Length: 540
Image (cartoon, rainbow, N blue to C red; front, side):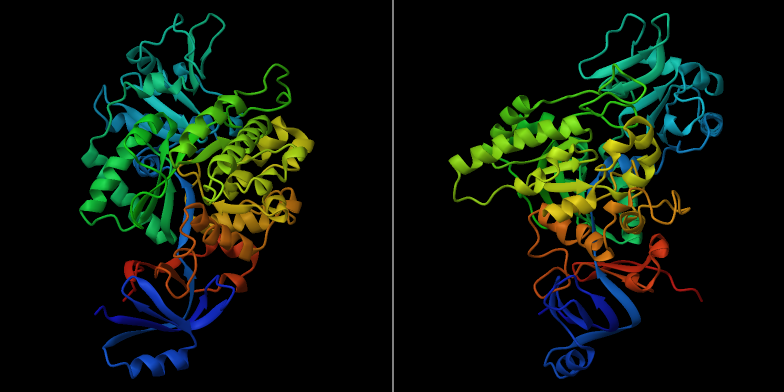
């Protein structure tokens, strides 16, 4: 019989309404056996006929393990090795490229991530700037949004992109006045260069995921919903079979794998509680950063630009019915208000199909990823259609200046609208979209509660203060809401009997620190399934 582990002398924040707080917890194997008061549990298990282990947590606060409901695990893992291009000036970014070029043999690719032209006085860079600092290396730098890339001339040449190369479907090659590529690739045009970059081996991907796994444990993340592709899935399967995957992963598959997944008989929920299939991921539009999010009205200052709609309601309905018929839920990326309306219209059709064909089967856990801008007429539709609002708090604080500049005051009132979605009754599932944002959930909690950046901007009330939510609501979005999105709400997201012993220890109670200090909180230990997967080293 597995040994019983008793954690005591602690402040347990359970997120279980039946017992919100406790001072001790008994764990049997992977799951929580009992949560209660220290005196009772110590007396019971010290008299238990089987040996138990007792750990004095010395007054620490215990939270359920936090779940990142939207993360790109392979891309985040790779980003830990790339140049950090999230700089305040274009000159600083170019300097980092130059430093990397000095360290690499000529001809090797220089990869980076995180630039945002909206933060740079000059706006977009061009190929000639990168040519100046890395003439002997092909350079590929992805934008913070992951919806644009900045490349140099050598990278364009390797991809065969010239003035005569047409824009690919769903993509744009930005051009100079003479028609030559400028070095900026939007949306699907990024793939033209990405396709010629030597791909990491499965062994390399596995190793980088293992390194990223340790980073996530230190942040208090015990489960992620991953949105990368086939190679990531292969790597996760191998790590799981080798017993090295400790992180829980809900693996969403890209839409281009839909036919293969259906033909193979796979469906949402297949797998186990360490690695299981989630949804099929579709894209309805682009992103705010490169101005490709699909909008009902033009971007401010760009009367001819309403973004890029990649899927309309009719096409998404067709795809969604086929997926649903085979047991797959959908996760649809939608940022602009037009994209969200098209997706909501499609889900309305899909829900009608589900009710007519499968009236007694529980509804699939469909979700919209990002939900960044909604028209006022559409605010209550996610709740009405029982869709999960999969949102990322840090996007609001990162994007607020861009949103004000290009969407304007009327549209930003219901942008990143967490309070509104909760008030209508929608379920929130919070994540980071890493590597778009760093996957520190305490940074996300801070953003959700304050609507402020780390420096306190834009002011004491926060940005669009009407959309702030409480700490309890934000914590539930990182725990019970994300667990519900994975159809695991009966075993993840709470510290409750029968639930997995996934938990984190903090030196401070988040309810007792000022909201402005939430982002400074950091776990001192992380447990998954009753096993410590990370513990802060004690000095001395």
